[in-house]
Length: 340
Image 1 (spheres, one colour):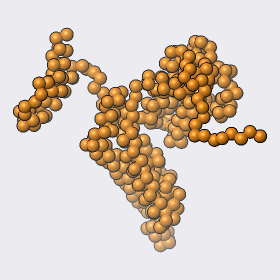
Image 2: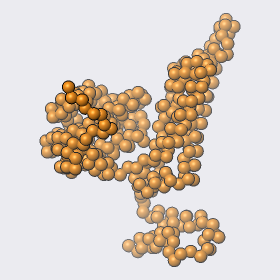
Image 3: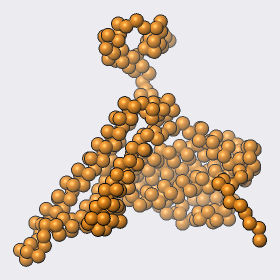
């Protein structure tokens, strides 16, 4: 029997070799773009983005194996996936029932008054990420190409850049709430159940931009970091305040429905316990969307320059400065723009 020595990484197949055509790259880039956009979306919008990841990944596989997109029908793309990569798909636990399930969910979210549950979103997101990685691997191998090269080329084409800093802040608050739940569990019992009540298990906060310089500023500027931390904490306080108000409402509802006999038998603490066990205690959704898009109109460039210039303290404006400052460069750019 041969003994294989375990190493940290498996060797890359076809290392350094690359022959994946541009149309396949493009489809995979679109798929990854929607996969990343899904991180910043929730509810029906998230389902829509995830479905586009599935569809474009299937299209990339069809183009890679047949030289062109031979069909635009989603169901036939699925059939072609199993025709070309059926054995490999089965090994990776990718089955037809998964596609049917999420196709039905996508249709339900588009054409019916339906909002997907947290569990449905998590399940669809996990499957979509798994399918995308499967597509990258199998396309590279079928075309005798370096999988790492393909993944990097696709990722470089996407043009979406996410802040790591806000993810760290969210993780800090999540861990803090988990510690509080554990401490309460040690004192009052039900440690696991209390940990499941952590709202940050079900909350998403994402910050991304289409310019790497913008995200680099966000992640490295101390003042912006402080503001971001405050924003995350404010969201945490808002959720907890709403939970508390919801608990008070349910407690009052239960207390008002008690009979005289039950009042004598049941303490106030019992009523609160019943309220926390009520299915409506945490069963609510809250969404806050904040987007800034200054890509158009171009005329705003000069306006921004004027506003920034007026906001500078007079003492700073009067100081002796180099021959050409960033603000003067901006003004010169605006002047040249107006001359066109």
